[in-house]
Image (spheres, rainbow, N blue to C red):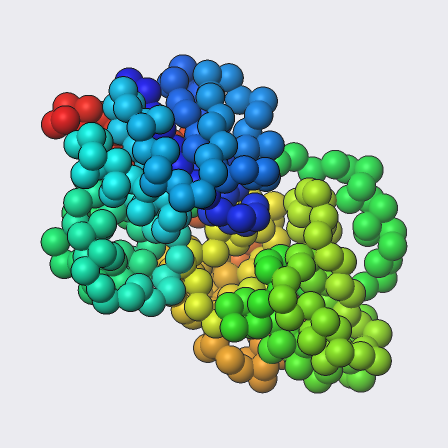
Length: 346
C-alpha cells in the first residue's frame, strides 16, 4: 500500500499541522507516501525530513497534473482544492479517494460539492458539526468522524523560563490563532481585557498569531497595558506552557485542534460553545464553555477561574485525561483502519 496526500493550502495552519502529524505517524509505520503541494509550500518544507515520503510540488491548475497519483492505493485530500484534484483523478483513473474536512464553514449547495463528497470512499469530518454540514450538502456521502490530534512538539524549558520571567507576577491568559475576528473572535477578548484592566491589573492577555485583523485589533487595544500581541512564534507550546488560562472565543470552529495541545500541557480552557468545540470540552468537567459573542461571559468566566485555583487544577487534570484519546498515534490508527478498508474494497 502506498498513499498519496494532497494539500494545496497557502500557509501553515491547523489543517496543515494535522496533515504533517498524520504523514509522520504513517512513515513510522513504514508506509510509502507522496505529498502533493503547491509551489513554495511551507507544509512541504516541514515534511522534508520524513522518510519514505516523496514531495511533489505542482503548478496551477493542479488537476492538469492528476497523473502523478497513478499507481497509488488511494488519494487522501486534506482541503478543498485537494478534493477537487482527487475528484478529477477519480473520474480519469478510477482512483479511490478520501477527504478530510476540517472546518465547519457553510458549504455551497451546488452540484460539484454534492458529487465530490458522494464519490469519496469516505468523507471524514473532525466533529459532528462538520459531518452534519457535509451531509446537508451531500446526503449520499459516506461519512466518518476522526478528530484531530495534539502535537508532539516539546517545550523548550529555557525559553519557557524566559517568558515566565518576562511576565513575572502576572496571571497569563493566552490565545493562539489567526487574527481574524470573523472566525477567532479576538475582538471579544480585547473587550474583556478593557473590562478587567482597572480592577485586575495582574491579569495579562497574550495573543499569538498574525492575520488580516491585526492592525484593527491593535487599534482597539490602544492604551491597554494588560495585553501583548506576540505575533507568530516558532513553538507555541513554549508559550502555552506558561499560560495560567487559555481563552478561545471563536465565533465558529470545526474542532479547535489547538485546544488539544493546551489540554496536553495542563492549562485550563475557556472556550465558546460553537461548532466542534463541545466534542472536546465538557463544561465544568474539563473546561468551561461560554456562549459566543459575549465579552461579559468571558470576563465572568475568567474571574471565576482566577479566584478558584482548585477549580482550575481540577479542570486541567480532567482535560489531561481526556486528551489521551487524541494522540497522533490514535489518530493515525483510525486512518490506517480506514485505508485498509479502501484497499480491501478497491
